[in-house]
Image 1: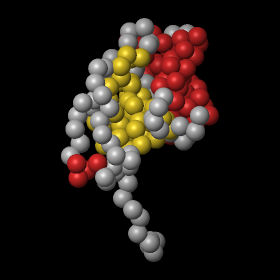
Image 2 (image 1 turned 30 degrees about the vertical axis):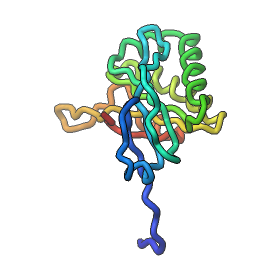
Image 3 (image 1 turned 90 degrees about the vertical axis):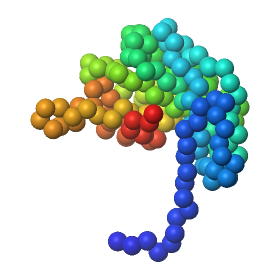
Length: 171
């Protein structure tokens, strides 16, 4: 195998609200994943105070994060709560100049794998119907005593088949 043409670099960065990108980096940036939204205990989305960083012509993708499984478990408990959360995330993706939305929901145990996958499928359908991007941050798998990966509450194969952007263990 060989490549006969060069490929332009594609650069993405994680940025916090209020963080300043180095001026020489802004012009190189294609995508900016902006952390600044969190998942509340009731499943609603809370925006942190701050302004969006200067990202030049880069696509801006807000990241909604939960470092605890409890808020995710709460909205996965009912179809109505899942629907409401999908709607809230889709509305965030549709705001202003956002190119889509990313979710970074940590700590789900194995018994939530099916429900979380179903939620991501519904979210992907909703976000893609708006011609927006969906990125799903998946925690790096733990390695069990036999050396096999433990994906916990995340079905990497099913989520990967949904035409979503995936990344393992962004911090």
